Length: 103
Length: 103
Image 1 (cartoon, rainbow over the protein chains, first blue to last red):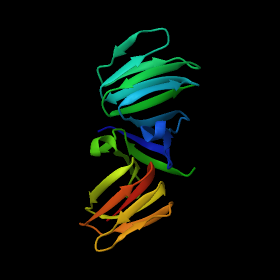
Image 2 (image 1 turned 30 degrees about the vertical axis):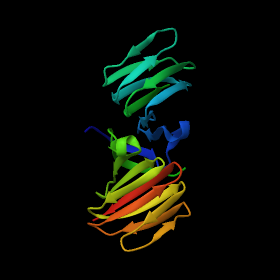
Image 3 (image 1 turned 135 degrees about the horizontal axis):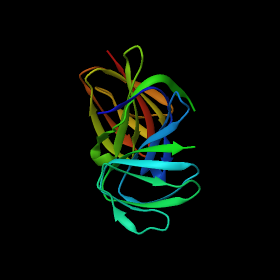
């Protein structure tokens, strides 16, 4: 188990897709932000504002990045999504993730 | 939105009931521990080790405490569960909660 120390966490969850995707926002002392989240099986599309590094820590996942084909991730695996774009996910089993927002 | 500052959060989620209940463990500088979690609709039973204060922040929830009848919570609402016992929940809508473990 790894830990983030000396952080601020927002108490209320971020809830998407009727609770099938939820996360908590974590702020670091350097001002950077991550979200720690869970995805239940399903198909999802997410839009990005900032560039995002998605660390899929566990779970059976396929991802479609902008302009690319669907591919299966071998979790734990990371992928990067450009700012102001979107990505699609097929979640086959409960997936634990960490999203880093890159300004 | 309220925040917990200067805390340590375990990166990996706690996952129960096939992902229908998940949480993140938050450690405070005084050594106390809380978990921030989400429950999807369903019926659940939880055992306690420490005394627990469950703050049901949002959601349509019924609770059955040891030796008591089922009752509907008017979230946000808290309830307390003795150490080394258990409680039952009927979750009718996505529920965001904060559990405090009391040593």
